[in-house]
Image 1 (cartoon, rainbow, N blue to C red):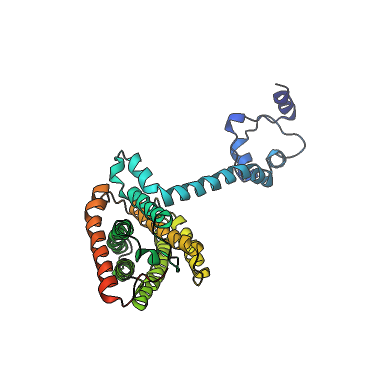
Image 2 (image 1 turned 135 degrees about the vertical axis):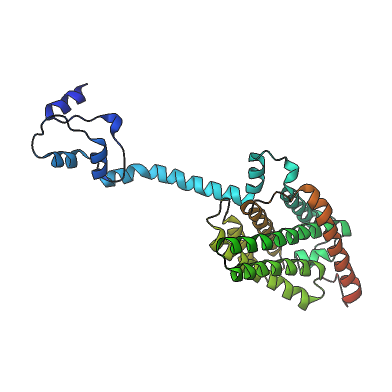
Length: 319
């Protein structure tokens, strides 16, 4: 009441309900101040300028809100890049068994745990490929099944990207180039999963081609899909950390290199899951993963064992 009386003595009446806090003091005064009565000590414009909040004050007041928004954006990026596909399915009322990528991640973690802490002695060259020549078939299938899911998801992404680029930009050239790049990722992934490490040149060239092609595909996805709903840069960041660590410890046979390799595989799986979210895929169910990708996984297992036993001159000598 006292503040209202003081304003009336100055000839200036402010209606609080009409005040709008914007970053511009002039806008605030123009939109939120109503004058009732004569002014004293200067024109109405001077009174408006004196009483309007300073822009710098508004910026300082807004910093906590900006910080909360940044935290919210980072959280959303992390969620979309990890469990975004599952969250979107649950939001649409789809059952958990419609999200096959959950089982893919769990199965890969099972492979890592069994290969590292099981009865298989670690090879001298500690790596995923080194373990694959030594582990029994049922453990190898855990890896081959995940690789098959990666091939399945990458082929889907190749077709989805081609359709998107053709429909949005009308440039079939970009769509064909990106689609072929994704198919190259799928072929290389299947290739080094079917060719053992004892065929060193072929195996290593396939691995290097997969790393380069995937890095390029992920970067192009950042440029072309970053504005799409559900896109997350988190898989690309995790992939970059994994590949950098692999390069750093490449000539060191240790668990650090093994963990770096496992990180790149997890990043690839998360990238595939995020592409499902971006392109609204609903068909990668647990049943598809178990049946179709299971058949592909068995094929990769048989090809790997054939090459290991029939083509390699020496195998399993990494102990």
